[in-house]
Image (cartoon, rainbow, N blue to C red; front, side, top):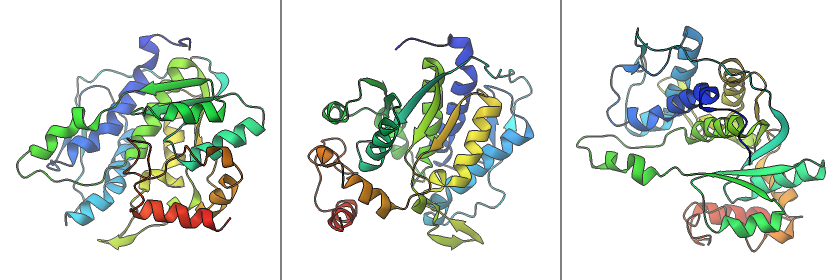
Length: 291
C-alpha cells in the first residue's frame, strides 16, 4: 500500500499511541505522578487520558485492592514540544481491525454487501489468519508487530510489581488510527458489540467494567479526541455497536464458509485451534447452537 503522509505527518498519532500504552508501565507500581515529556497536552487532553487510565484500570485496581481515588496525576513537562494536528486529506477507504473471530468477519461481510473495499489490519499478526483472509476475499492486509513478551515481559520479574488487566482496546484503537493515517484511510471500522456496555461490579462507588475501552462512552471520547488532536477527517467507530452478542451470532451463522477457519478462543489464537475447554469456547459453541 502507498504511504499518504511523511514521518512529520504522523507525529500526533504516534504520540497518542504512546499515551495509550502508558497503563502497561504505570500498573507495575502505580506511581504518584505520570510526567509527559514527549509532547504538550492541554487540560482537555489530560482529562481524556486520566479518565481512560482510571476507568480502564478499574478491574486491576479492584483485584489488587488499590484505592484509585486521586491516585492518577498527569504532569506535562514545561519543555515538552507542541504536537501538530495533521490535516492530510484521507480517502474513502475502510480499515477493519481483525483478531480472527466472528465479530470482525461480520463487519467485513456487512461492508462488502454495501460494495465497500475492505483492508484488514492486525496488531500482533497470526500466521493462520492468511487462510481466513483468503476465504473472506480480502486482498489488502496490514500487519503491525507488537510483542507483549518482548516489550513488557520483564515487568513480571520486577519485585513487588502489580499485575492485571489493562485497557488493551484503546491500544488497538490508536494503533489503527496511526495505520489509517499512514495509508490514507478515512474510516477505521471496529466490531465491538452492545454487551460491552454492561459493567461487572461496583468498587469504591464506581462501576467497574472489565471492558471499559470497549464501551460507547470511550469510543465516542476517543473518536472526538482523534478528530481534534490527530486528524479531523479520520473516523474511528464500531459498526456493530447496536447489536447484542446473540444478534451477531445469528448473523455469523449464515456465513458457513468461515466455520472451519475462525477462532474466538483466547487460548487458541496463537495456534489457530480451539482449546475446547475454556469459557469462551463453550460460550461461542452454545451461542451458535441456537441458530
